[in-house]
Image (cartoon, rainbow, N blue to C red; front, side, top):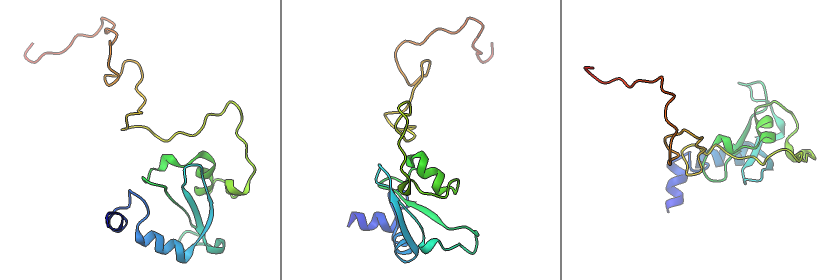
Length: 136
């Protein structure tokens, strides 16, 4: 019952019924990435009359977060490349890191040294800063 209401009322926790219905009628599955996101395009590569190009979209596995699209699929979904990664034989170089989504707002957020959220001892100011006090 909870899944029904989530699919009916929220778009950020996965595909809505409308998106699933549109995808079943007009979509053609192109591939899937390592995060479980599924990529679609208009059936038969038909051009969208309003856009003049084929329509491409993704159904996220879980939370709808655009930073969870790997670089290869990001290029395809934004029409930068014509061939989807599922139709290529791509092997990452040894110096390339695995894709990581944006961790901002999560416990895994990147906190550089000097950040007030990092905790611990902070370095003192350089001595050229004098705090303003009201009425002073």
